[in-house]
Amino acid sequence: MSAPESQTTISPHTQHPLVTRTYPSQSALNNVIERSEVAQKQWARVPLKERIAIATKFMDEFKAMGEEISLELTVQMGRPVSQVPGEVRGTLDRAAYMLSIAESSLADVSLADTDKPGFRRYIKRAPMGVVLVIAPWNYPYLTSINSVLPALVAGNSVILKPSPQTPLTAERFALAWSRAGLPQDLLQVAHLSPELAAFAVTHPKVDFVSFTGSVVGGKAVAQAAAGAGFKGVGLELGGKDPAYVRADAQLDYTAAELVDGAMFNSGQSCCAVERIYVHESIYEPFVAKFVELVKGYKLGDPTLPGTNLGPVVSVASAEKIRKQVADAVKAGAKALIPEDLFATAQPGTAYVAPQVLVDVDHSMDVMMEETFGPVIGIMKVSSDEEAVTLMNDSPYGLTASVWTDAAAHPESEAAFLRITDELFTGTVFLNRCDALDPALAWTGVKDSGRGVSLSKFGYDQLTRAKSVHMKIKTT
Ligand code: NAD
Image 1 (spheres, rainbow, N blue to C red):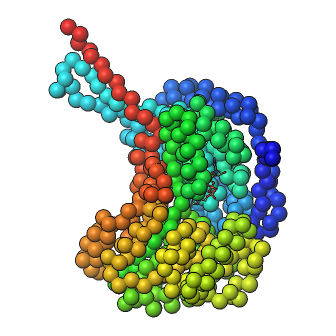
Image 2: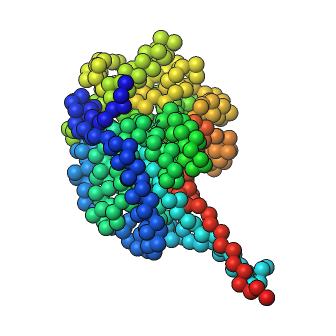
Image 3: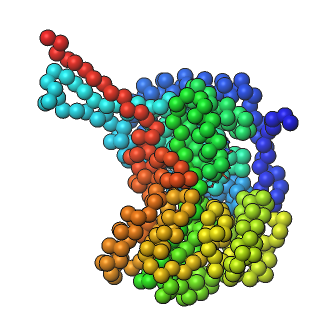
């Protein structure tokens, strides 16, 4: 079979073709990479303050596109139009924070010469060179800003490969940078087939690969890169994020936050809440409250302002989610949301009814494998120890959340901190979930990935330490 020459995006809610992009030839892609290398060398000589000024202007340009972005993103990946402005806001928040720490994060680390008179020594943060950013469709702007902005500000050039589901997002992103005055070839968008993506990953002039996506994709990229020298690869992958509701959690607040954490974007967030463990003393009222809130969702056309639950990204994804639920029910799980409540959700469509499953256990895929849909499994636990064991019983380790009334009970905060030490995840939340703070390191363990984006450490990943060792006095 010959390699595909183009890609066509299918809109999830209409199942109609939306936009087609032709792939470049291998030699055209080679050209893109070579131009990127040339542009990077000049860009690295531009003073940091000027690079920051262009990135600041990018924020203005991106903000000005806010309204166009909403519907455009909705028709590409199905998130309700009313919920897209949050992605624009979040992208700007992350950009603002990363710019606010750029100078301090990228400053030379100077060493005192008191112990070594006659010497001057310091460590520079040198750019990696050409950075290939491979982005997913579920939060295309939020995930791209994590690496594109710090990479450019640190003096790298970027080739941005978007998901075939959201090709217009990368083009819009690049347009905002270009309007902000970013010199040519520093940010190039490349729509690539899997074969061309592998060519780019293994290209000797690509110095670093920042991949955000599935575990399967991340493994393939890491393996390809490993066969092509020693280039670095950052991997932000999937999750099966757990929540633990302690006996003293505030019921209404916790149920509402966790429903949102499980259902927002139809559960298609890497850090969506996918499994919940509830202390037996509040299990019944918690489940009742949770179910009541889920029943209130409006599943439907994501372009309508009243919709708060859209389709999932594709029919294939919808069928996978439906099968995971059906398999769990076959194995003894109880589904608490009647199917006829969400008539739009029909087999053969990308519309999936939200579902709450109880009587689940860890022999079921729905408690072990990423669902990426509006589905939650809830289990009863009798102690912190049992909750921690179950939360850690996972191939993933992105985030975990603990819900307890730390404001009213100081011992609850102490318990939270003990639990935090026991959990093997990149982030542990208290009384919140499915949220990123750009001042904190975004990172996963186990199958959730490797490396860090955002925070000061996000700049570390996109630069390398370069030591300058000067012997001033030679006599
Ligand atoms: P995906 O792995 O299918 O695709 C992600 C990107 O990688 C796309 O651009 C795709 O074309 C490309 N790609 C896939 N296989 C590749 C290969 N072998 N070589 C080169 N490129 C390849 O993932 P997706 O469906 O777009 O995104 C959803 C996944 O991303 C979920 O698992 C989600 O949890 C994860 N995700 C993680 C984070 C995070 O920060 N940890 C953030 C968002 C999404």
